[in-house]
Image (cartoon, rainbow, N blue to C red):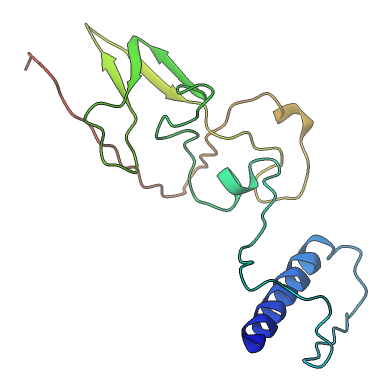
Length: 165
């Protein structure tokens, strides 16, 4: 068990060192020395303590670390099931006969003629492929599409009581 805790401490130390190095690269010294010693374990860690902490700042966990461009794509946000969606038509979020147990919610859209469904995506605070903060983007919805970049789109659509060509 002691070896497991030592290995956990080493992995956590490496993750923290790499993360700190990435965030502080602009003002970091030329090198950083880290010493890890199995003889100097530090504080005792409970055998039942597992996990990793990620602070979700500016959608880092939602839109920054994943390739997902659609915000609230499964209509699962508790406070507002249609958050980040503009629905021009009669639409409501339902849970009866959902896609699967992991994605029980879906949008039921009733259309008589035409309708429009738009996802606002994630707000990009920085200019594309730069570290230049752009305050003008603060309240601008943006899916983040860029010219000459390939995107994959998957939709699950079910027609109910459809009559037409």
